[in-house]
Amino acid sequence: MAKKVSFMGIFLAFALILSYIESLIPFFYGVPGMKLGLTNLLIVLLLYLSDWKCALSINVLRIVLVGFLFGNAFSILYSLSGGLLSFAGMCLVKKFFSLRMTSVSVVGGITHNLGQIMVACLVVSNYQLILYFPVLFLGGLVTGLCIGIISNILYPYVHHIILSEGEKS
Image (cartoon, rainbow, N blue to C red):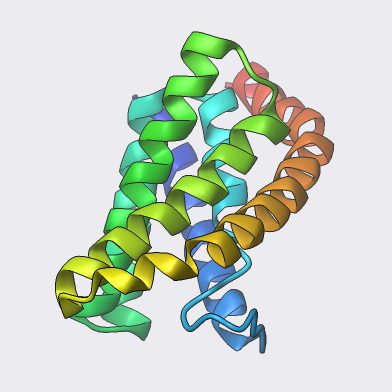
């Protein structure tokens, strides 16, 4: 149990660091709020290294903490809506369609943007915002693909480190 808690703590710390780094990167896609999704890298890795409960815990904790540290209540609302829909989408396609890490990440990128645009439509009571979705779809596709490729590259190394640490105890 203590191993899993320290493992989760390390991933949460990395998620917070990646969120901070992402906030410093000037990235403009033409749509307000669009980001690279660097922290999704950790969530995708966790889905393959651990169970969904661990990945969900890290995802929600990261969103709430980052919202309090670098954002506000609305940023938490938007991030939670995108993060939870993305997480559900990734879990479902991983489990029922046995997709590879890159494809799961692409689904995550697209559904994250879908969740955020849906909440934006509700919050501002302007359903024409959905017209941004084709741009968001493309953005989620590209960033999800990049994050998925990086996840595939990192997975064997992270998996090896976790296995090595497990053998030491």
